[in-house]
Image 1 (tube, rainbow, N blue to C red):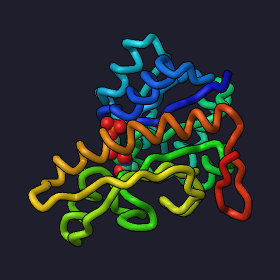
Image 2 (tube, helix red, strand yellow; image 1 turned 60 degrees about the horizontal axis):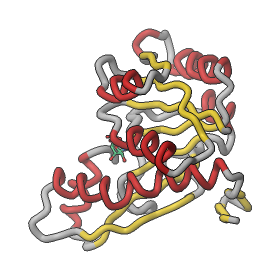
Image 3 (cartoon, rainbow, N blue to C red; image 1 turned 90 degrees about the vertical axis):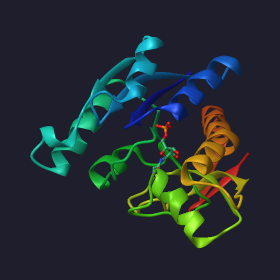
Length: 206
Ligand code: GAR
């Protein structure tokens, strides 16, 4: 069974989708700890309800980004996690964290990478940018995390229609329901079955 650590910042609907899928589909994985960078994040309550160890580790408690990242590394290493999932985590992590868990960190991005991604594109801002551009298809992407923001090897993507009368909120909800909550658990299942191989920066599914 793989041990998963989650990093969250907000509502935690992706965390919930993962927890539900693990139970429903018998995925050989367990979320063993949840860390938020924000006090009061509802995702922490979701963890609490499932009796999952959880805490807040926030940047402002440390003197530098490096110290913050090293504290996160220590936390997850002590808990022997095999995979870290960023589930609506709104902090950009640097090499001090990423290099410690090479090809063992996943993120979900609410658009079809390489569109509408990178620094500044997060949460509702992504959906606003999609509507402002006028694309007719958007979606979600699960990818491995590398030092370059939203540029790591892509694991799964799913497209979602954009409609003329969408607001960022309406579009966000559709992208979550039709794409994010589907492909994130799926990617974790593939990882848990050791079916994801990275060759020259490209993920091959076996
Ligand atoms: C989700 O839409 C997720 O894809 C996005 O924030 C939302 C978090 O919702 N993440 C990013 O924008 C990261 N760049 P949740 O807390 O309910 O899972």
